[in-house]
Length: 280
Image 1 (cartoon, rainbow, N blue to C red):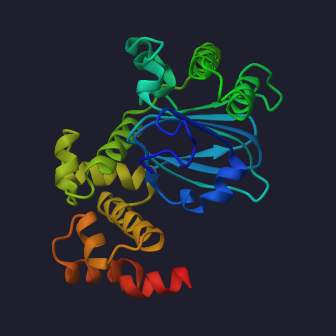
Image 2: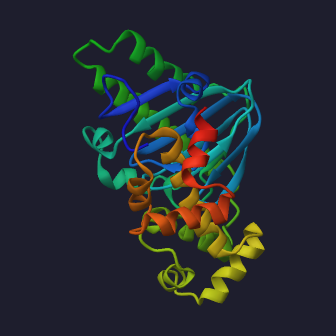
């Protein structure tokens, strides 16, 4: 999802009740990436949220933070409730300094991208509610963007304060490598599909990267690369009308026939059959 779903402020920010967002865009459960910042506040329900290959518990009181370029997917219960808030760097920078945006700890890959807050906390949740109400009731006001930006700034600043109160385990070297691998994979999976490429970027050998992935995720690095390619291909097959040859090119295959064999080898179905079975 490179662009915000249909809101009149789509180029700056987007907020929606999570349960409504999921109902309107069911494909967001599949691995995908954004070119904007994302905040996800859960008020009800238990599930999981995978960010750059690492899976976290999702429960009431959890607040997730994503930066542009991160891939994520989730498993949500039917009774999920909460808020999802997207914003662009430009929207933040209209009022606040770039240096501050770069300093937030939850946007740093060395820290967990989630805060686990008490389900009844009364500091951050009201700010999400205020942004949502401002979208509903104040969108026509001339200072609308200023007000939303101020609420967002308060949310990030207060989350930073709350973050400091929570004991943070130092991320292990292996976990940091997995997170970096996830970021690189999301950026380059269309053009680079070898373990060696990512290992060199991480200053590792291919065997070492595979060993880390097996230990941390119980999968090889090559399997994770394949899964990212297939996830993007299946998303395009289901949610676009592009011909298979165009989808093959979009995920880095010049030869549509080779792509079809690759896809069938990893899914058990040819691309056309998969599309037909998934959309009927």
